[in-house]
Figure 1 (spheres, helix red, strand yellow):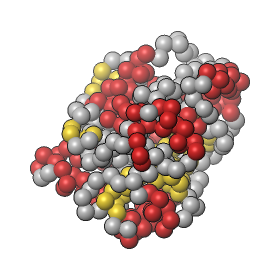
Figure 2 (cartoon, one colour):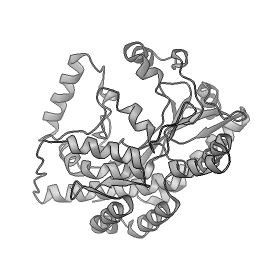
Figure 3 (cartoon, helix red, strand yellow):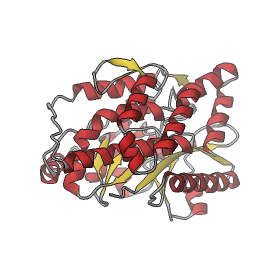
Length: 359
């Protein structure tokens, strides 16, 4: 089975001189055009959508080209773009919501939660044979998603101060009513009934507001990873995409063989594991999906690589993913690189690092 992949990346829009978040995504989109780019809830963010790819090399070339286009267009407006969960310098205001009826309704309904949606993520799509498989695979892949969050962690700063977390974006994101572990369902019909019930409750308005860590796409035959921060380095997105593709391939293979997800219905540990990954990044312990006990991040991720080796080799990804993982563990998380730069210099220099890595 060929499992194709694609990615959506969100970018903060900054004033190039001050490094502050600014609500000028509209100007950037005017220069870029709407093909491959779109607006977000806040006027300070832009989203890009990759093409669909068979190889990690193809995905990397796509993401890199998109970032170059964004950086060039931003420079012409005196702006810069940053792929990170949060940026260090921002202000919270209800006035900067994008002028779109849906976004306006969200801002009115969710108030401060929407006002503080000054966050960006990276999402990865992986092909699945059908929607039933997508729904059933969620239960199999979910235990392995917190380590992917740790790889992506890039948001230690919020409104000018260090939060103590590697991914503060996760803490902000968790306040939405549907964020967190996806849960387990027998098939697509059961999942869709649960979604219809949520919408019927009035708490969310549409399927676009399903903010679980992983979900079946409403419009494509894919499973969509949503747990991670936006990543300053495109290589990190590619690494996460390779691991996620392997998780999906492995889950589909297990389901084809009639494997029972053996879900006990208790997802408290998954939410706890997500918190641990957001707190620690790669620099502290994670919750090992095998033992549900604390273990060093590098050990959890290397065990994950070993477990997924057959699926990675089936996609031709093993060597690339192994090498990218070695590099990621040696360099540390983006959150740690940012903190080190700020300690050695200052906050503006840290912001320059994020801009440079994104570009």
